[in-house]
Length: 320
Ligand code: SF4
Image 1 (cartoon, rainbow, N blue to C red):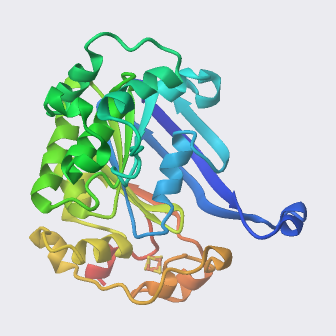
Image 2: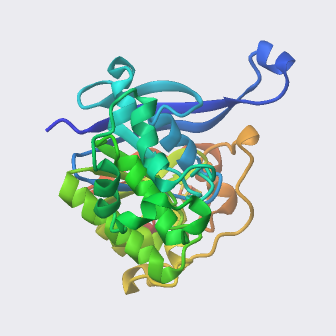
């Protein structure tokens, strides 16, 4: 079956430096440096990585929200660019900071009617109440303003707004950031429940591996704008191949015993995007780096449900 979203060799750059640098062709910083992935209908994919890994830039580019983009993005079997304004309805973005993404001047009712107004569509009678019910909020909240909502309620209003135009893909940027732990699982359960009930595909951006484990079918680990490991969530958690994946799992308090065996700690800082390391771009932080790593970029290797880019994956090291 054709995937809902198909991304090939996606590269995303942003202007940097002054006008002179840009005129000389030196003023573009490549933040996403060539990624490939598919997202099936009804599937949840988590993009994982530290701050600055490029995951939000990648997701915003897919939603048409910025950056100089090259490569191919296909949606429902056709190039995204051929979809016109319809794509703005098919792909919804839930922003990270729920409260500040809701204008304080408007009531919840006005905020939920706004997507219809933006697309010059009539907002059906009772639609605001339907959307509030869909996300588990009482209809009485419609007359409140964002500052009168709790963090969890604001997040739910953000979800309701994203669902107003019946999208097929929802992109959620750090959907539980800033929420209490008890509210975090409520929001995750809500997203998962809506995915099943409405047949949505979800692309979740997060650095929180508990979220990934809770809701994602598949995960992609990003480092310096590239995927270093991708695969079905369970096998990646059970047996990370890439040292960066293993280090991220090690840093997580709730990991399974298999991952704990490969406990690793990340040293040093993420290198600058303006000075990408030669060879494997992770070598400056990798405890297993050898001469080959410093000289030659590793190839992508696929084993079953998992693929990774590493000369000396964890499994091979265990048997050295
Ligand atoms: Fe580490 Fe080498 Fe693998 Fe890069 S290729 S992650 S430096 S072992």
